[in-house]
Length: 366
Image (tube, rainbow, N blue to C red; front, side, top):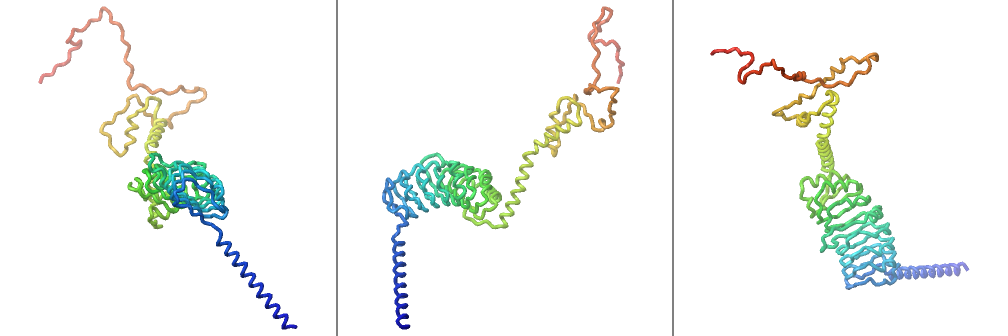
């Protein structure tokens, strides 16, 4: 009896193992049969057809066609990678339903505005280089779109788009890699001011822009972007980064000092005249001389109507008692006494003859 039970148990175990193997084979075959990649590239398509089994597609390839419009994308709600480069697309639309999209490739199209990406909350990469190469206008960015994708976007490629400034990049607070090659960027200081707020930025590529040929371009970008590791495909050493940062601080402090120097000088001159001078006209020559203290003026002119009143005089001056009353406001005394008024001549007055004086002058003979 015991031997028969053992044989039955072994047979049951063998059956269970065979059934498990069959189930595994069926599952693997079903997984292999699932179409996760949709290959629609290089087929001269002018319209995007409706895909078969769209809920299984994760990678969609529509590049190298003649597409002018993005359509039928609401069916590909599970797609994570979408390739639409090398087409004739003029507007970014129909992408709101792609909630799982992580990488979007739109290079070499005719798009003029980056917009309608509010539904892509998981978008990590956006490649939108070489847009509208034949037109003169640069690529524009919708602020609402950038604010929405700024929480997730890590890589951005905007090369060859005729960009003239980088002020639009500020909402992309999670950006790590920025590629902006061959644009029309000239002011590297303004670009550094716009990029210094992106604390996650570790790599920048500005090759081909006019500002890369200017003096102190690399030093300024490295010093202002604290987390930067690679600039124009060249790694940045940590010691050079700290040196550039300290050097930039000194230069900026010096520039601020020079910028406010004239204002501070004017303010100091005004305070000096308010404390030490009586009321009267301002001496403009004193201001011009005080601004250039290191230079010795050749001619110094003083205004005779200005009366100098040193501080010691105000300290030694007695304060009026309450019985005397309040003293009238002081007025600058004249430098010379006024001339006596002219009186009319009488008949007895003798007019001197022209050329002869009333009182003869003593003659000195040599």
